[in-house]
Length: 376
Ligand SMILES: Nc1nc2c(ncn2[C@@H]2O[C@H](COP(=O)(O)OP(=O)(O)OP(=O)(O)O)[C@@H](O)[C@H]2O)c(=O)[nH]1
Ligand SMILES: [Mg+2]
Image 1: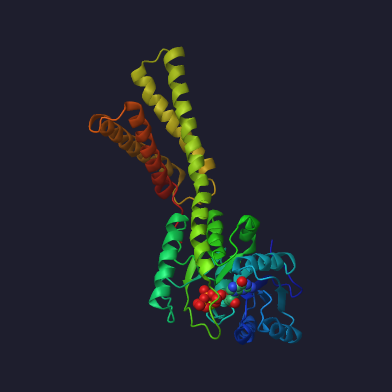
Image 2: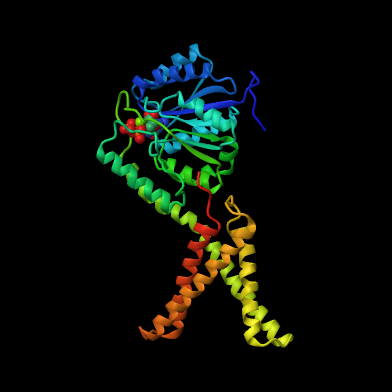
């Protein structure tokens, strides 16, 4: 359903968090209002989320609100960027009935003209459009080597520990999000209050299988004032990556539960075939293994990885699953044999370690290959 306003156009809300941005905010808002005139398919409204700035930011916005009715503002206590965004998102949905939300900084680093591209891509079905600083065609002319290094390391950690390896810029503050996608994310449960909210949000959106795209942007120099990124924010960023990793373990836990069920299926099939139908163990065992592989595949396809939009057709996934299971079995066995023969480790401990290594390989292989998330 498309939300409509009185001009009969769906609303795209540009959420701009501000803290002491008096010198920047007027220019930024006026530029967005210029862009608004060039967009026919959406009605652009601006929502400033100001956290009791001491420099008179909200007074400046109030004056602009008297002249332009498409500007809104909410004020609150300064808790952090993430907290401001959560309040802004909630207001944009409940009070402004927005269909799209654009996150944008107040300090002139994000070019409002890019909003036009965001809207076009959203109309073409993209649910998450990221203004990216780290893909071909983008640039960060004002970045110091230190800032670039911090950003690259931070992004690397989020991409590979957070499971969003397909996204190059996970910390960008310039994005367009479809509200229907945002509604699937339980933002209240996301504990990050500061800048790390940006990374938590991207991981949460991708967990909900966002149809995403990155487009290159030029990340300009901050016009006036200072960065609000604090030391605390950098610490929270690291703690938050651990939290995201833990949250992503949900898939792995499901994987292990299915694995245990698979062992039960294997055992029961073998028992039934040998005890009730008189099959020879040599034949009953491979049949039981195959049946447990099939039942595991079905459980992973329809439960463990249910949220993932799949790259491959069903039958290809089925074959890949067998290949991974086969290699994992060989690794399990080779590890077991090495431990008991070469390292003379107790056979039950070796068996356990072999199974553990095999399970991790199995999970990695199926998560990154069989059920791999599509690249952008
Ligand atoms: N409401 C609110 N806005 C904030 C808060 N912290 C930062 N902001 C705003 O969030 C936006 C991004 O903050 P910046 O300090 O520019 O962060 P940055 O772009 O990563 O850092 P620079 O490149 O140095 O500018 C700006 O519009 C800030 O005013 C906060 O606690 N509350
Ligand atoms: Mg900035």
